[in-house]
Length: 159
Image (tube, rainbow, N blue to C red; front, top):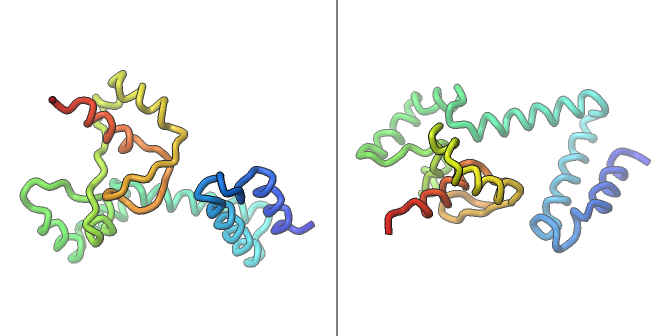
């Protein structure tokens, strides 16, 4: 059995192609296609694991507004033009895609909020959820502190 066959059986036995799985089975198909592509490049064993580690590192950096690449982007001519359009107190989005699609900026928790018992209680409930927040981004993703803050801010809003 080759690695593609193994990957298909693994995804199938874990229910990732089922209609009631993540995204109606789309996530399983996506993972299978990604696996097949990486295998077609000749990766196996250590190089395959390293490829996935690098992809994860890129994802984490892309999702981190403090990453040096984002900081350099906001200092570039394109980034400065976007910053100028946000003058007047509006928070600057972490990603240019939020500007281009007029999406709202997800709130980030402060260190004090991270230590608030309400924040922790919300996090314990939603940390395993896949969440879609239309208007803030497209598609689903795992719960983050920003998702907690959307709920936290609503609960703390004066009546």
